[in-house]
Image 1: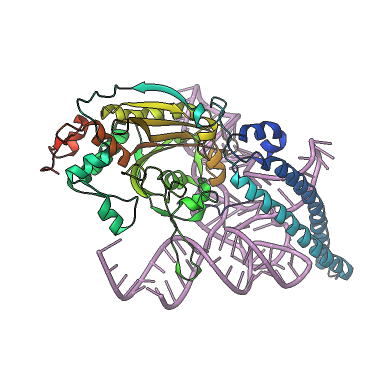
Image 2 (image 1 turned 180 degrees about the vertical axis):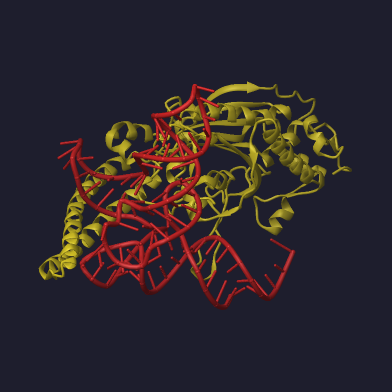
Length: 443
RNA sequence: GGAGGGGUGGCCGAGCGGUUGAAGGCGCCGGUCUUGAAAACCGGAAUCCCGCAAGGGAUCGGGGGUUCGAAUCCCUCCCCCUCCGCCA
């Protein structure tokens, strides 16, 4: 039996209030390039206010408990202490009012805290995307004897990418994959899952694609990014569900509200799911082709580990994702994101960018993050140390291993030939039932 | 969809108005015994908040209510289970 997930519970925000209280300047500085620094002073004021009120109400409660005990004793003696009871009535009202006031303050604090992003790791360059650092490159972009086409031209010429019909079925930013493309998509999923389970030690897991608000909040998607999510409408006030924007959400929250044993860590999971994103605010970006879709497949890697091990696990996670590109012989580079470009829940993120000759650019194909205790705190994911002490928040990590649609794109662009055909990478052939080349006939 | 049952500590499971932060078991930590281990026995240990501390407060699915006082009574929401119906 697994523990019931806690309904979001006051005072387990993603940043520990104590850290803000004790190091307000450092926190504000760390958040400068990430957003939220302006909340720090307000939080400090609220925190002071809250503590003052809590102290006051608790002394009243202490009195209530004492008098209650006196009444109980009197009753046992057969007396009826009318004046004590009358006093308790008044006390009870006062306590109720003060508690309500504390609740108001806590509500405001919680709302602010839920909007604060994670603090960056010291090794992360400070600044916006222009401060991102290329860590390494692998592979040499192929020299083409002809002008390499973008994937949408390659795919439409082969009759395997169909944007028009997808728009008819749904709307723009969807695609229909025909024949060899659908086959390739499936092969890629299989190939990635096999690699990570057989060689990298991940356990495969299959999860719901629709999750509730607690799960979204626990992993940092809500409340801040509601406009990026597809949401269901339930009749008669039923609780809505959200379509997952990444498998990171359900897979990380598998252990929400649980206390794991240190000796079970690290947990390493791999999951294949479709991902659904509104892409609000991306109007005009990547409108052609299947770079940015409302629905795409992804194989996701998730780890739950101890604070001491998490940065080592981040490096190996990146290596595991890189291995997919290496086996597919797709040139790529690894980029360490600067503070301002690092995602909300993450303390440190490496992006893998694959070379797309049709666009003449490296484009993101994986994002690998160490969220440290940010999600663990929100989602109450803890572990009991071997030494038997108090339960500690775990560290959670995630990374794409890889985005399948973009991998398909990369193959179409990197492996295209002058005659419009596309060669299937060697590593994928065990999964394509003998198909070695996509031509208009084979497609 | 109809009818019932239930949500308690790391896990299982008692309690059903005051002496219960909560019996018992399992698991965990320490000790005795042992060449070592196991078994047996003894002891320890929930979490969060406020406080320099002493100490105090809160927490038995969430929220609200009744009461001087609630894990225990009432309302409401969420979730799980069993049976019947329906169904990929």
